[in-house]
Structure formats: structure tokens, C-alpha cells
Length: 198
Length: 246
Image (cartoon, rainbow over all chains, first blue to last red; front, side):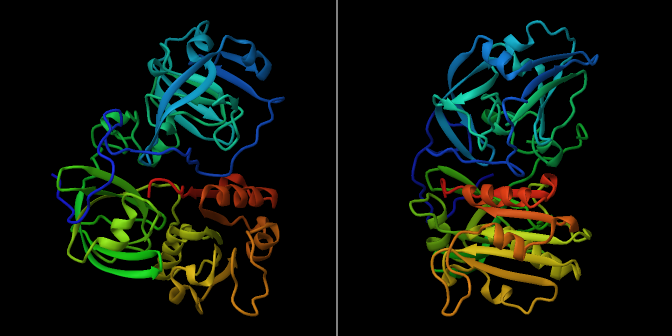
């Protein structure tokens, strides 16, 4: 069902490379639910915790020492803006999870400041996700999730947890922060999975 | 999430009932939405506009007041060169339909059964969801003390002057102008700083609920000030209005 709003013409016509309901922006808007945590790299760690409680931890220096990739990806925010061809540098989750023994199907990304978001473990693998620490050739600013954030560009951007502190693996899908507040558990922009039930 | 029982938020047809200029560049718009499910103060809606050729655009807007049965109220700030907001503020006529989906957002909300003091800090059009909280407080007969610190360019840019001028029992409203002040105004124009938040907010040891809404730079600055003044970051809820897209 769709009705015409008289007198509305719009401006752009749908670009083939935008998911439904999105519009293009050249800015990089900021969205977060609270104050921006400031995390010094000296005390920063990233921890993968398996379903059995085993922990794998990296310091900032250890993260930077891992092989990194530079990727150019499109970002889609559930608040409707999309930003195309953004360039990031970071360590693929494939690398971080390579030696992790797990039979888990699900992951919860956890952040400094308490934010969480859930996703299937499969969505973090096969070249789909990174721990990113550089944006457009510069250190990632705190506003945009620095010193390091999760980057999972094939899902709405709230899944790309800013200020990431770790990944917890689990047999069960546990809803994260926005997922318990009415947002979609998976969040595929191409299927316009914004809210629960979409 | 209760698997299988989640129902998709439906698109509903909303008809413009009334549009009133709020400032020279903003319009308060009341829509009739049959079967509106109700909402909490601070929540927003998605609007979907469809052109004759089928082209669609969606935007999110904060609700400005509690629902009045099946009527909802938004205030739209015209974004220069925006695609949607100039249509809403300048072109849309009473009787015109648009699609609406919501309410959306369960974090940046004030619940009338909450007993903690409330600090609202608004930057520009960020006052919209905060005004909804003041109106929800009044509608619920709540006696929880509220303070609103409202940063706005000039007196002519204030939203809801009649509503916020007072006297409002239990709601303190303080304006902080950034560009121009009324004659004899004690505070020189300028951005909100530590002294403003310290003087017109609540002490951190009262553990108030803090809601901050405005442009990104404003929200970042105010949230940092609140943290520096000792407020628990988990009690500082933020909503950021980007200048994008409109």
C-alpha cells in the first residue's frame, strides 16, 4: 500500500546502489545513545570470549602488529542516510578468530561504555567484518568509535559497534542494546530490516 | 524478542490537520492517524513521502507532544536544500496525506512513572523531543522536578515560546542564546559551557536523568560537560540531529 503525497516531487531518483528507504549523504553523521567514551590506547584491549569462557586477548600494539586490510565500503544507517565508498583500515575478524576454538553460532559485540549488539557469527567471517582503526587514512576519532570499532558494512551501521572492546560467542542469539529497544535482530539494509518484525 | 509474535510496524496514512508556523523556518504540524497506538515522550516516527512517479523518500522526525487520541504533532525545521523538510514546511496543505510508521525508539524516552529529577539540554530544533517530555509530565500530573536548558541562536528562533514561558510548576526553563540576546539579558551570547550546565542543571549527586538533544557538536560538548561534572554516563541519554538530508 502506498499513497501519493500531492505536491511532493523529491529530488534525486533512486540510485541503483542504495538500499530501499535510504538517501545519500556526503557528511558522516554521528549517532550514539550516550556520551562518547574516551579509551586510551595504552589500556585498550580486545577480547574474544568463547561459549566455554575461554578468552583470547590482544593489546593495542598486538592489534596493530597483525596483518591489516584497507577496504572501501558503503555505510547504511538505520536513520536513513547512506554514505558510499568510505575507506577504512583494520584487521579482519577472520584473522582474529582464526585460532579461536568455538562451536558457537552467535556473537555479541561489546563496547567500552556498555553498548552491545548481536549478530550471527557467520556474518563476522569470510571477509565481511573488521576491527577498524583508521578512517580515510586518519586515526579513527572517538566520535566515530575510535580507537577501534567493529565494521560490518553489509548490515545497518548500529551493528558496527563503536569503541569495541570484545566479541562474546554464544550458542544463543542474545539481543543487544538497540535490539532490545525495538530494532531488528539482524538488520539487513537491502531487506529494509529496520525494526522488529520487518 | 518473542520469536514469531513480533508484528511489523505498519505504515499508516496520516492526514495533515493543521500546520502552524513555529518560527520563520519551522512548522508545527498535527496529523490525524487512524488507530495510532500511542507513544512515549522522546520517541520518533518515520515519514514516507511518495511522488506521482512512485519515487519515495523517508525521514525520521521526533514527536513533539503526547498523542491526543489519534492525532500526533511534529515540528519540522526547514533544512536549506533539504529534499523533504521544505515540502513539509512550505508546500503540504491540510488534507494532504503522507505515510507514517512508529512510534520508534525505546531509549531516549521519559516515562511518567519515573521519579528522578530530569535535566533536559536542547540545542536548536533538538528541543522537540524534550518539549514532548515536558508536555507528557504535565499530561500525567507528574511532580518530578524538570530543568530545561535551551541553547538557541536568537529569541526569534525559540520553539514553543508560549508553552515554555511559564509559569510552569516544577519546570525551570533557561535560555542560552548563541548569537543575539534580548535587551538587558544578563548572559552574553555564546555556546553552552560548563558554568551554564553547572548553574542551571542538577548536581550529579541527585542522580538526575539527563536528556541531551541537538546537533552532533552540541551533544558531544554537553555530554562531555555532564560527565566532567560527575554525572553517571549511563544516565546521560543523547539524541543527535545531523544537518544532513533534511
